[in-house]
Image 1 (cartoon, rainbow, N blue to C red):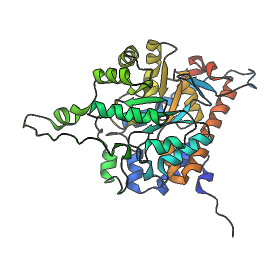
Image 2 (cartoon, one colour):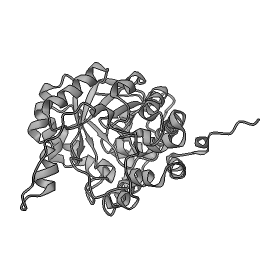
Image 3 (cartoon, rainbow, N blue to C red):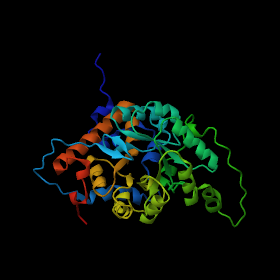
Length: 365
């Protein structure tokens, strides 16, 4: 009997994985993952920001000793790419985050593991031999945040990434139209022992947003406290304004992720690519900056590095690949992107990550 070729082997790029995932996933789950906030203007800008930049190559440079190796927070990375913290990955595949972790380890790529993982941070960590960071969604009980961090440290995670731009969901009409609901049996297992939230009664002049949901959101004071209490380096994810980046640096955050949450929270905010040059200028050359939102090609990774990022995160592409073929597909997707970056660096005349800078780009605007 002829063995059937896995569907993912037909994928030639990350966009192919999105197309294949649309066929593989239930409609409501695909729409939930693909969709952005409100009118999806920011979601579109996350892509157009890359498209509006041209790579300006140099020729005849010797690139035969080229490498994508770099260092982030003192850690050796084979390539400046990391899997982003994507929640509830069992929606894509029965092996969920464990499959993604196995793929990341096989390709020597780091991974951020979400608070809202559908498998425990300990189980995922056991599969990761590469840089592993734990992403924290702030919890109302300060002590419970510390408990999560201590668990992460004990499990071998090397950094804490606090997401600050999604205290409440943005307006997600695409998911609403698709009637998305979290499938039965999938839950945030890391939060099973979370203390119950206090019940609240609202007066007619109070808002369920301001006095309700946002009352659970962290403040600068909370983050500063967390940085002082954590034994692991703390990175703040979801920063777009240079003044916020500078404040994060001043209170002791080891780095930031320049991000608009994949265009999924507040619509019409700028793309990370539009603001990272100003942030890099303000925080200096040595401060750690990661970027996510819209990465689909090795040329995109190159452009992000040229504008000041030290590395990039992959969110939706890992979910799509997971849905198409589990760990082998995620590994295949990562290999495609890494090889595209190598080809881009070679043809641009930049053999090493340190050679990639703003002079490598021509802005078409």
